[in-house]
Amino acid sequence: MRAHTPALPDHQLAQHSHRRGATLARLTLLASAQFLVVLNTSIVNVALPAVGGDLGLSQSGMTWVVNAYLIAFGALLPVGGRLADVFGNRRSFVAGLALFAAGSVGGSLAGALAASVSSGSGAGLLIASRAVQGIGAAVLSPAALAILLSQSPPGPVRGRALGVWGAASAAGGAAGVLLGGLLTSVLGWWSVFAVSAAIGVPVLLAVPRLIPRDVRNQQGRLDLPGALAATAGLVLLVHGLGSRDGSSLQNLVVPAAGILLLLALVPLERRAKDPLIPPLLLGNRSVVAGNVLMLLLGAVWVGTFFFLPLYQQDVLDYSPLTAGLTQLPLAAALMAASTLAGRLRGTLLPGLLLLAAGLLWLARLPVEGSFVADLLGPTVLTGLGLGLAFVPLTALGVSGVDARHAGVAGGLINTTRQVGGALGLALLTTLAAPAAATAAVVGPAAAAVHGYRRALVGAALIALLAAIGAAVHSVRAPGRSWSRNPTDSTHPTDITYAHEKPKEHS
Image (cartoon, rainbow, N blue to C red; front, side):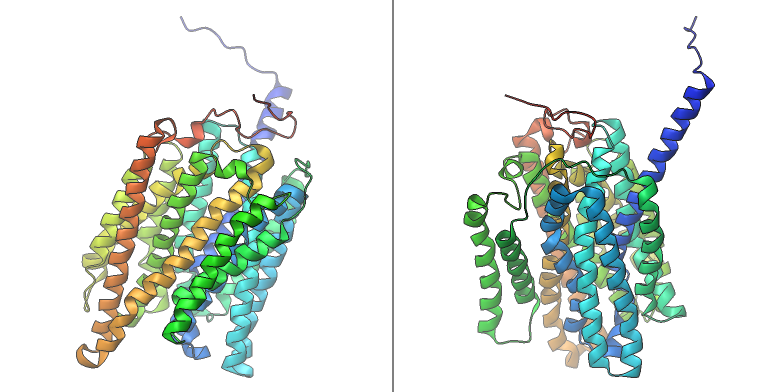
């Protein structure tokens, strides 16, 4: 006979139900913030042809509408993570969300300015507003991830929480394309920025009820020289790689200067009293591997969502709404795979291989294609690969991290994704550019398709490189490989909680 389990008293059941409800509401709030951050990496993509037409932007100029956000976001994420650790997660969450909403309002006003004053003024305001959005996101995202980690004990609970986090990221990237197409078709491209403010304000108002007050884990100060060197180095590197407007010498000198500034971080951080990235993190093999692989995944992710809408609208003559709707299967596959990856083990390497296969299949783009025959299968496969790889990489990048450094670890893993996206977009657009020279011979549509094919093959090779890296890491560190779920880690430096004393180790 089965042992009888006594029922809990009514008041204990009520308390348990209340705690579960509060936890669910908090997780929803944090996931909504992450959804909003990732939404803005893709929501402008479908609107880019309309933005370029209204503001007189070339393809290089349209790239900067995307990269202004990605560079500011990626370059300042370590700073945002450090701010969360020093000044508190909730304070950083609120400040970042408010700044993000302000940038969203500025972006929506750029459309009105372009129509009433000049396209040049509108372009300047739009790119500046995207940078402000990126700065806000850099403060917001690591604080949100640090709050999630501090509220989720290691093991299955953290795995499910990170699964929701990954699903929100996947939904943001995919929904951005759909919302961008719908809003651009119905209201105009300015509305893709107004919707971010409309989502951000309710989230901001809910913070006092759902996010606990900050408990200072660490006293310290911001490493300003390191922050300036990291930001300037990344901006110069991405700008130099993506620029084709200057002389050949300039196009070599600018990224070289960025690399030198990034190399200068090593002695700067060694001498810093409170370094931007604590040496303890760089000594954690899981953190290093997770960030290197996330850099590669980010390059593939952003590149895919950039070129696909351009192909659909410029070559297949889809409307913005149709382009958004035809990416719903990709969105569904991405969300489903992200949810599964939070519950299953061993999804990283298979996910990266599926991603590479989907991109190679997608690279067979024809000049006169159809959605069902040429796009449905490869985009679903690509979405599955992205979702299966993203969640374990996020978990790997924060595995074994003490609560004192949760903010900067969360900022670092998001940094590598966004910086990887900016670098990847710069490299892939450069890879696609030579096709323009053949437009006079084969026609603009065929030339564009040739360029998109080259870019997608390049993205597939990056995904294969990431798969090789994942396999090497699994051999060198079998205890923390892709064959395990990193969220199950019982490493002695796992996250501690506000009511616990930090664990001490010999």
